[in-house]
Length: 106
Image 1 (tube, rainbow, N blue to C red):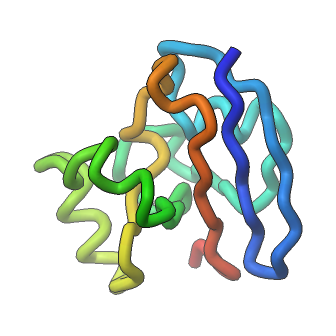
Image 2 (cartoon, rainbow, N blue to C red):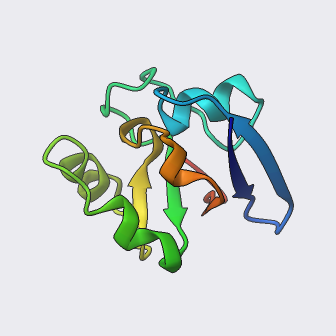
């Protein structure tokens, strides 16, 4: 399992044991991370699975790709490190990843 910590907008932290080869979004939903709405079920159409990747991890994840970038732009969220969790595949290299969730996914 891969340990991933979610930090809510109110500062509450929760670390989950994420399954490899599933998206960060699938792991979050499966582990009851309420801030991840995932209205489109991981198809990069809604932007309701946004997370903010801590600066220390941004380089390891790379830039948002052609699929997620338009949705991030459409959301109007300009927070540094914003990504769609449905587009991040959990691998062993992500063990210890820390992400923050927005106050609202709307």
